Length: 137
Image (cartoon, rainbow, N blue to C red; front, side, top):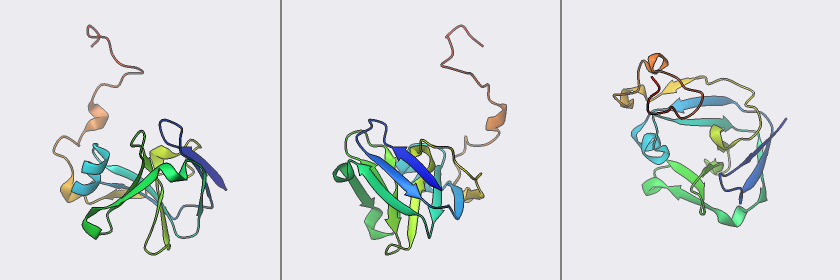
């Protein structure tokens, strides 16, 4: 199985060959900070292989205080990109970086003790197909 992905500006493109072991939505403070969102959404694999198709030289990896909280990103647009962790034993793929269909659903939410105070009951918030007009309710 092959999965294609890229950053927002398109300067970095990659391919992942193989399956994913798990898919977690992480609510820890570090993931909320580095995504600027309610949670990170990452796929994990101990067997899949990452291949950079273009722009590998434009990828930087940040390891927060050498703690193992690792994020790779495009230096041009800041998009999250895959990275290899645990001395090559684990491939972590931000699910939003994939252009191909995601073959699995999330296995669960993790670190929910750190969940943002506004991150509950979101299924009850109005949903719009596009940016709503100011007069739209």
